[in-house]
Amino acid sequence: MAIGAVCLLSLVVCCGLAYWQWERFSQAGGTFQNLGYVFQWPLFGLFPAFMVWRMRKLAAQRRAEDAAAVGADTSTQVVGEPVPAAQEPVVTVEPVRTPAHDDEDDELAAYNRYLRELHARDQR
Image 1: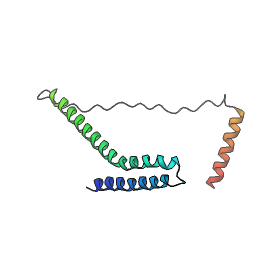
Image 2 (image 1 turned 90 degrees about the vertical axis):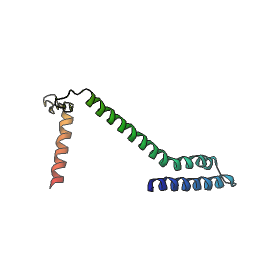
Image 3 (image 1 turned 135 degrees about the vertical axis):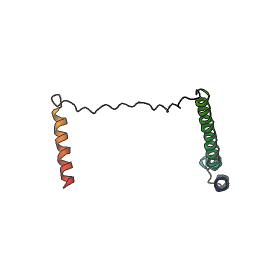
Image 4 (image 1 turned 45 degrees about the vertical axis):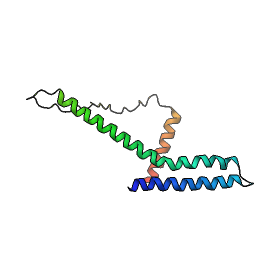
């Protein structure tokens, strides 16, 4: 209920702002920028309603996929066999390798020393 009220309030406020921009466009000093806002504000007002619709659609799709996955798991299961655990992807982490210092540039080494000195000063 509250979400619907916020969407409706957003639409009303943004349509009011569009009307205000139309009035400014109609005046002698009105520009095409005001006219652009006339078309832009109602879109801003409709955006919360669109997002609610989109979130509900994605939630329904996710529930359907979950139901299909559960249905597929139970249909292939043989009676008496244990239910296989969901296989999680194997993630391998490689250790961070420090670069060899013999090919380090002299300017880079001086810059790194300078950064270490600055860090040491900040720590004090």
